[in-house]
Image (cartoon, rainbow, N blue to C red; front, side, top):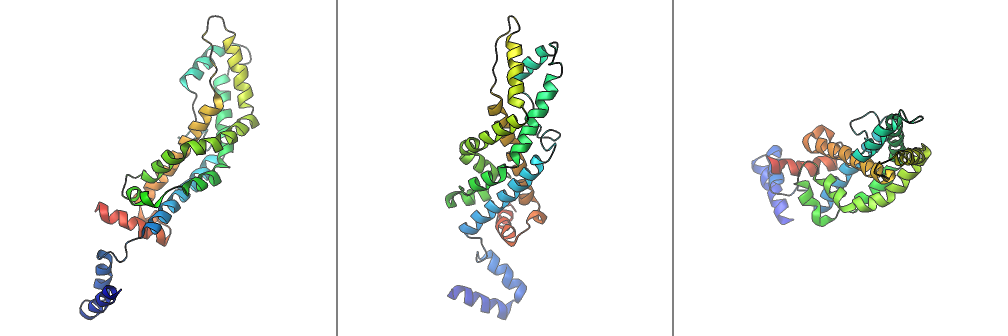
Length: 237
């Protein structure tokens, strides 16, 4: 404290206010604390989650976007063979729309699940995350919480898929395929696949938003974000 008072008096006497601000900054007095860095990173992730969930939960948020959920290769084998069977001529387009609508519906319930998970970021990791890659906070959250998030998100996906009759429709399609002579029977678990794809799409959107906040000061919409990511900027320069 004595050092701060002395430095302030010295700067005001000999250098003026502009120089004072610069010296205070370079001396580390305005450095964000660990708690501030933690809060800033969590704020950035909350912004990304909110934006991602809002965009992906809108109609066509998945279905007509870069995050569209496509069928896995084994499922495409099924749809290709079913095109000649009555009632399944357009099976691929039908199931694609159903699973993407299910993901969009589930995304409306994603925000509180993810925001709760964001609280898991520890003080021990915050500075490594801050000085890490453009998606360091997103990757930390994904690695630390994916399993628990999956457990919470999967039932939401199942309910949403059932809402659009996707699981029932896919079960009928799979049974029809398995009745074709000489084919190798398949039974892909639709809800598991869609859950993983929906989560991956949301994490990608969060990573994009994190990158924007890291690279573009205009995106730092609070004083806390500006202070925390200024620390990152000074280390990169």
